[in-house]
Amino acid sequence: MNITYVIGFVGAVAVMIIGMMFGGETGFTPSQVGNFWDPASVFITIGCTVMIIIASFPPSALKDIPKHFKVLMNTKGNNPLAIIDELVELAQVARKNGLLALEEKGNQQEDPFFKQCIMLIVDNNDADQAREIMMNDIEQSSARHEAGAGMYDKGSSVAPAFGMVGTLVGLINMLRAMDVSSGGGDLGPAMATALVTTLYGCVMAHMVFGPISSQLRQRDEEEMLCKLIIVEGIMSIQAGSNPKALREKLLTFVAQRQRDGGGAGKAGKGGEAE
Image (tube, rainbow, N blue to C red):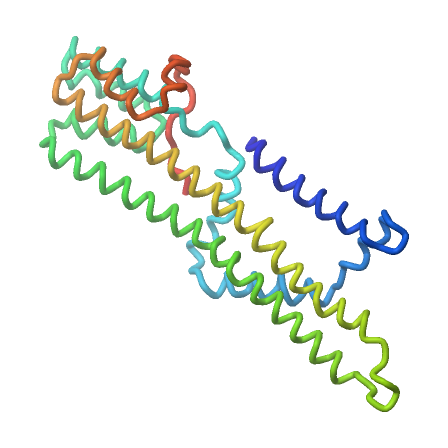
């Protein structure tokens, strides 16, 4: 589970609710939270934001939303050190038995990208051609991930706008209901109702959509790093690199503190976060 996302989101909601309880004439008053609830504002802000997201993206993108949340909450998908260990093992097999001996290892791979890369050199493809295929796969995969994150960027940009729309709707209704002959009436509650929609828009943008898009891009960066390690490792294996030298070369892709931590076993291969 992505504990930082859970802690951050739940903590932000808790802090906001506690903040709503302060500031009244009686000090800390839990009942004040009810002042920030308005069904019409929820309907306008959330409903319009969701509808605009639906209008902005094709069904093929919208159906991937459950997958986005699965990727968001999964923190075990990409492990560079485990991939380096596997590549060094493949280099040892290739050095001892030749590239054709990697076919069995490739068929055992659960990660489609890793398997494809192994098969490219088993099939004796030209090095430049093999690298081009691998890099094109990485670029297209990253583009799909960016499109997914862009969906939440869209939500983050339109939610405050519809919060303001809700505020304008509330103000218009308030002004139309004013009784000028009696001094305008009590405008305080009406104004509060109009303004709460702006609050909803800001909350949706910065507490819901913003963190999701940031987390998805972080997952994409982690996956792309693992794929680049695979590409470099596979090409070095095809070139006949020494396993020890290969490990030293691939470790330059990860931070020094990760290198000092040593190998991480065989778990956690890269998987496409789409």
